[in-house]
Structures are given as C-alpha cells and as structure tokens.
Length: 526
Image (cartoon, rainbow, N blue to C red; front, side, top):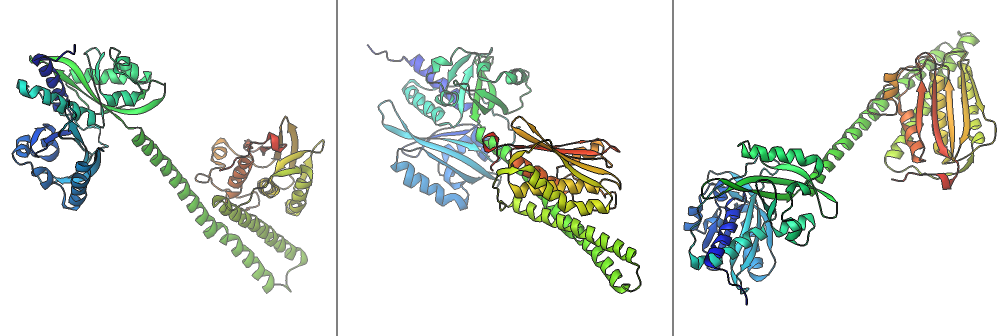
C-alpha cells in the first residue's frame, strides 16, 4: 500500500524547499496560470531594489522594469516560446532598478507541474550577472518563519522543488561537520554520479582536490566566525577522476532557536569561464610577443638597414670625388669596407625577408637527405673572403661523410648566420672551426671561435626577440640580432635544438643538432 505523506511530513518538506529558496542568492519566482505571483524570494530587493510585496501587489512590475531595448526579446520568449513549448527558457536581459541603475539578469524559466502532471504555473531563477567576476558578492542570508497551511503544503513542495531543480547551480546541504545530507540533481550531474546515495553521508571535502582542503576548511571556519568572504573557487574531482573548476557559496542554516544546524552550499561549474580567462592570458602574452616583433622589425628597417646604406653611399662618394688622388692601397681599403658593409646588409635583408615569410607561414619547408660536407663547404667558400679581410682562418673538420635530414635552404641560412656571427666577434688573427659529429640518431654541428665571448647576462638574452640586444663586432660591424632568432626557429622546425657555450674573453661555441633521417626526425608542424 502506497504511503501517503502526513501533514507534518508535507510541511517539513515544504519548509525544507522554501528554506533553500529563501537562502538562494538568486531571485526565485513562482507565478500561477492566472499571472499571480505566489512566491518571490527576498533576494529580489537586493537585485532590483523593489521589495517582494511590491511585486506581489503589482505583478506587471516584473515586465515594467525590463529595459526598453530588451522588451521585444523578453516578450518574444515568454509569449511565443514558453507558453507553446515544453522547453526551458534561458536568456539574459537588462532591468532598470528602483534607484535607476541598469543591471543584467540571467533568467532561467520553465513550466511547473503538480503530482498529476498538470501545469500549475511558471517558476524562474534570476541571477544578477552584472558583476559576475566580483568575488566579493555576498550571499544574502534570510531567515523566515514558515507558516504554510495544510491545504497549501503539497503545492508548496512542488513549487519549491521546481525552483531548486531549474537552478543552473548545484545545491547541497551538509551537516556542521561536513557530511552531505542533500544534493540536488545538478550536483549529481556536475560530479558525474547517477544517484544521490553515492554522495550522501560522505564528507564534502572528498569531492575537492586535496590541495584545496585547507582553503575549504578556512572558508567554513570563517563562516562560523562571521568573516564570510563570498564565492570561493576550487578544483573539484568528478566520479571518473576528471577535474573541473567550481565556485562555491556557503551559508549557515538555522533552526527555530536560531542555532546553526547545517551548511547550505551553492555551487557552479566555472570551467568555461576559467578556460576563457586562461585563453585571455595566453592571447595577452601572444600580443606582447607580436608587439615586440613589430617594434624590433621597425627598428631594423628604420636603423639597421638604413645605417649601412648610408655608410656604403658615403664611402662611394668619397671614392668618386677622390678617384685620381687616392693611392691603390687606400682605394682597396675603402672598397673592402664597402664590400663588408654590403655583405652584412645582404645577410640582414635575407634574414628580414625569411623572418617575415616565416611569421606569415609563407616559407616552404622541404626536408631531404643531404651530404653535410657539400653544404658547409659551399657556405665556407662564400664566407672565406670576409674572414680573410679580417685575417681570420675558417675551416671545416669531420672524420667521415655525414648525412642530415634537413631543408637545404633553412640549413644554409642557419650556417650563414652562425658563421657570420663568429666572424663578427672574432679579432684579427683568430680562427673559426666548424665540426659535425654523429651522435646516435642525431648530427651535432658546432661553430666555435676564439673571439670576445659573452657573459651570462648576454647569453640569457639570446634567441629572444623582445630582449635581444645587438653588440658591435670587433671591427665595429653592426647587426640586428635577428639572425640568431631565425636560427632557433629553423632548427626547431626540424625538431632540433640550438644552444650556446661561451665565456667572456674566451670565445663562443654555437651548437645545434639535426636528425639523420626522416624516420628519426620529429618535425614540428604548426
């Protein structure tokens, strides 16, 4: 025989659900089919500025406070959708508060049914989302004596259950020592449980990641001492072990003697919001990098490209004006300077074009098996004249024929820049040596010089465009710092690594590695 609930049981259930609704920081409303407001939560005054009795006495006030710009969309949802569909309605719109402020409301509404599945009205949950990001929003706690007559008890239970179940947040109640006593359907869905029996009786901290236990304990302790701090963020653990970001508001529930008997927790899954915040931070970092790139490129174009051209033109004018007066040695000296400036400017221009193509995805990448000696010897031949002008020896050393799997144009760009860099910072009479050594499934290539070297501070600034600072060479050669940035990008494109070993006054060794074959490569593709 089916048990029929007694008046006391119905009254207790109704009181239970109304307590939840009264303590919700959302604005909860229940309207019957005649349009009469049967319940409106005390939080309405905090959100709208109007007291509950003002809405009850004038139900039209609910639509009168809607912002003029949003009236059409609100009317459309209520008149054309809610009344003619079984779907829940969710929308955001603005209201004008009693003191004239404009606030945004997140509105969730659905039809409510009695035990016989007959529609008895409409229940809605409204949230002030004007300051969603403000963690100091205080949860309004109101205590209200429940004096519901017997004939209204059953209807009240259905009404408040509907309010709780339409809430977008999860609602739970724990004992004062943290044991779960009640969980709403939304809580089960958020944590991935099928039945409340899987959660009831367990400590709430079981569902928080362990490193947040102390924070939760401090929040509960602060609540008992009257130092409530508002919504707190936690990392929660689902049944399957996965994690999500949650936001929890807690408040005490009291008995008729005003003694705390349990803890009300209203929880929301804020994973999407946190991910959006992280994405914003990521985009901010990317924008900072792009700004650094832009500033660097403008600096190169405005100064580093223009300056050598001025130098070349100046010496050419000097030679033209004194062509019959200069001795051969003096003419050769100026021509050597012009040749060196032109070569350095060409390298800079090549790097600038390659960098621009790389940043816009226009540079081709076609790795193949290459004989390293044929590539490096071609580069050395091109650089011999520049090295000779500074009385620097430049040689390649290898004990055997070595193959690499690389894009030939990118490899040549890396070698040209590293050798040019070594020539720039090596004094007259110095020497530069290039080595290639096979190491397992990699080829390690090193370009060493006995030049000026660099200290730790300078080493830490290399390969980073936003912090890279250029230094004049031993013959006052100028550079942009872009060459090393390009080397790093091209080497990493092959799945390789580039690094530096250097000591001030003792020279430098730039090293990078490349795969020996396609099967051993870890090519990076954006």
